[in-house]
Image 1 (tube, one colour):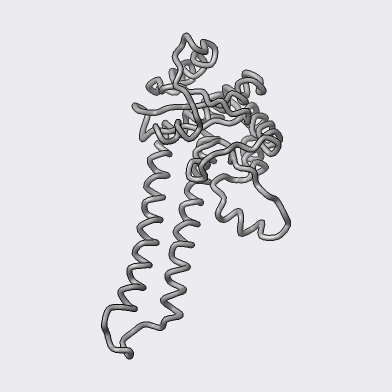
Image 2 (cartoon, one colour):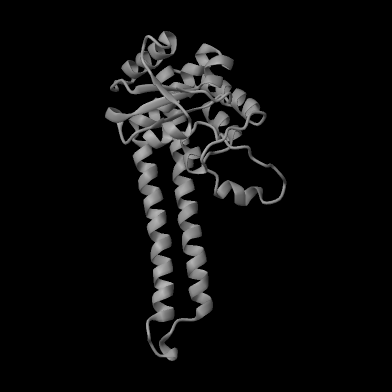
Length: 232
């Protein structure tokens, strides 16, 4: 959580700092039957939000200044409900485990290749060098695709949980649509490793007809259109 907050230049606040926003999160946490998380605000002008922390008892939910200043109250509430669902579902922990598994697969693939190349066995016993290179390249690729798929599935689940908490998905759908429109005009300088934590990818995305399908495989977020479709 400290790394995520530092990356966003965010500051943890109390009820006296921003009573309306803090009270909103407090009310949502009570409705969800969750411990009250710490609340933070990032100075970024892009409307966005994220949650961090291993579980409900050490979580932080953070909204950007742009979210609080450019979005209607009911849409801010929907966004924060989404972030609380990430906390409730322990998605930060799940994402960390997925990242660790992906890293381990990449490491094992590399070690296997080096062991085969320098293991001192006879040439007849050595695996095909082309197969070794493909293994070294494709194993991390497959691991990353799995990691990104896990991230996208957790976004859908957080959307669904927020809609259930609020009784409707319409406000969250409207919020996602508004964030999508504004975020493309206000890219945020965020460490790529932290981007998956946000409700919308904060990094500017180049869009073209080429490579769109491949880009989706490695995207940390589902398309906004698909999220809105499911919410409505």
